[in-house]
Every structure is written in C-alpha cells, then in structure tokens.
Length: 110
Image (cartoon, rainbow, N blue to C red; front, side, top):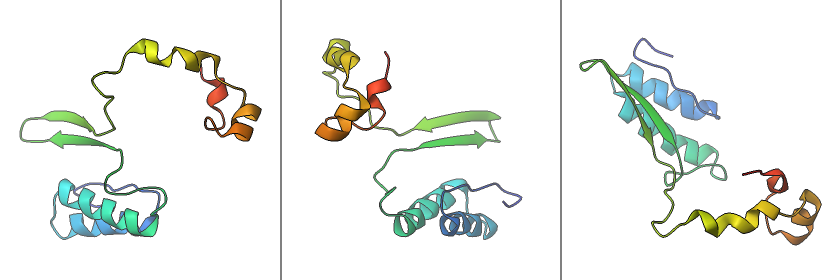
C-alpha cells in the first residue's frame, strides 16, 4: 500500500511490482499492467494477460467511481434456450467419471 493506492494479488511478487510502480510515481494503469505481467510469470497456470478481470477506478478530477468488466462476452447468437439441457446436469460423481463438466456443476441451479 502507498499513499497513492493499494495493490492486491494472489502472489506477493506481483503485488510488490504494482506497489513499486505507484511508489515511483506511476498511475493505476501502469501499476495494473506491471502487476498483471508479473502475476503471469510467477503464477502462469492461473492467469495471463489475455484473461478475465475487472478494474475499479476513481477519477478524482470528476469525482466519479467507475468499473470496467473485461470478462468474456457471450457471442451475439447466444439464446437462453441453448442452456436448457444444463438444468438436468449430471451429478458430481458422473461429472468426475465422464469429464463432461467441472466438479460442483451438478449443483448449479438456474
């Protein structure tokens, strides 16, 4: 944490990179990019620069908080009826054996 902000990541090396950028006078975007790149190096199986994310931003000059969501959007052709078959999803045991879905998905309710 610095006087300019706070950086939180699963890996301390990535947090330190973002903190160092802020301490050196960089802005939140500079810190976020450095943090993401270091996080991808120290924990490559769990993240990467092409992954999902979100960013909460405060613009002090405008006194505005905003939020950027960069998770994958669904394709334009997606329809709710495409997912009807998931309502009768297999049990966790069946999922493990068949590999059709992730463990726990059998408990999903719409």
